[in-house]
Image (cartoon, rainbow, N blue to C red):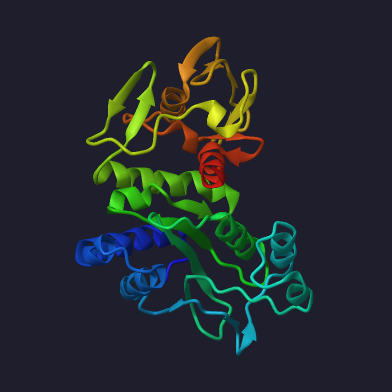
Length: 285
């Protein structure tokens, strides 16, 4: 199996689409999260037939519980620990990822996933911390982490995806997601002063810098070239090369793309991709 994160993401998206094609009743009936992740895991197993696809697998190697102590410490501080803090101090706090793709008993981990449902009130803050810690940990070495919410349609679910991986890979991975959205139901992209529809519209509103706590005068950086920076001039536009332009139009220009692109996937603020900042703040709100 190729360890290229773009291929891994495409395999995940294919499995997710097959789930929505064949098991839509599970979504209609709003079944429990564990039932959904179990069924999705069956489709993932068909894509990763040389690997093991497991739900809530809590072991490492030949039987040690899966733990990331740095994560446990942060979760305790944030009030997100699984047990009480005394139990965490005793090193009894164990991680149960919703779905993983790996080789049991070997140091060969591909994907780790955390899911929620759109009809539950469960936050994703704990999932985000868990996935980031598992990606960062030299002990587990997952190539790709994916957080998402099961929603009414495949497109709506894809729109909730948040990627965890090496920072240098994120731009290309979000481009894979964008391509899939355009190919299916599409999404709304702001270009200049005009908001156009690519096939259908998304439920997410147009991006505003205030959504991310970014003030006028702040500087955002193009992910493809650290030397290309733009200055925020109002809630929807930036100044670049002595001109005022929307973020999406600027991203399209810098990429040399013939098609509209979501600017939030191609610009960073304080080292973080804008779309990631937006999703994190949406979860908090």
